[in-house]
Amino acid sequence: MLDDARTAAPTSMPVLSRGRHRTPRTGACFMEMASYLAGERWSDHPACTHPLLARLARDVNDRTSDTGRARLGRLVPSVVGLHDDDPATDVRLALLCTAAALPVSSMERQHALAVALLAGEDVLAHLEGRSDGEPSEAARAALARVPGAAAWARRFTETTGPRARAGHRGRGAADRWVRGYLRHGAPSAVSLSVAGVAGACGVDADAVLHDLLVDAVALVRGHRAPTAAPAPELWAEACRLSAAGRR
Image 1 (spheres, rainbow, N blue to C red):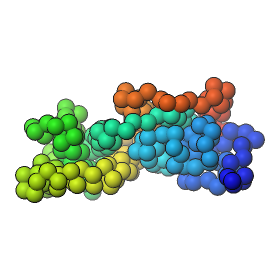
Image 2: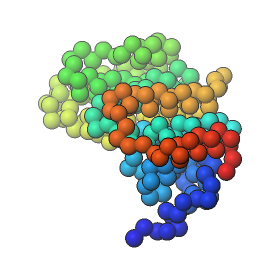
Image 3: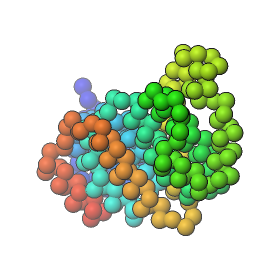
Image 4: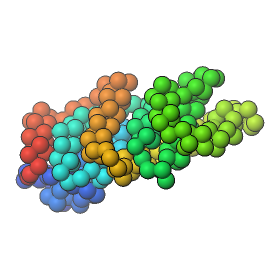
């Protein structure tokens, strides 16, 4: 039986805030609100949303200012029922994040982000059966803005990645590398990207993070239509109260 304290509906829509919340009455993070709208058990890891997209939403929620977070509430309904089982979607989500974060992040993070970007491009080429391994236009544009970090990352990745593994150790090694990237590399790239944007100087971090989440939702939706949606009345109430920034 589900814990009544954790599943009871709030008397009014909870306000978005950082971190996890034991019950809706103490507030909600982005994905907890999604679990409520989906009619699931109260959780910041609901089944209603693509796992890597949900991770991005949690990170954006926690790294956005209190003022900017109210605007995020309008996006909560858009992730409900949004899934895609294609592993390439995870890679594309990670690439979307790293390409957006790399040019604006601090120098301390740029090396790691450039490596993550090149690794993701290599994995995507492997999954798509491409042998050229050429970075996408978005990746090339991001790397061109940080030439020092890009050159360092290219040297670092020369002996890593699925193509290098396949050449030296066979297809099985390449497949294991890809599985490891999907399990650990892509989530790490997403979190590192959000942290990089949040700590960037000279940019409106709240706006960049908001738009990144919008683009990520569009990316997943472009590959798989939502399988479910919140009740229309909950959808409208969530948008209204989140925009007002109050209970």
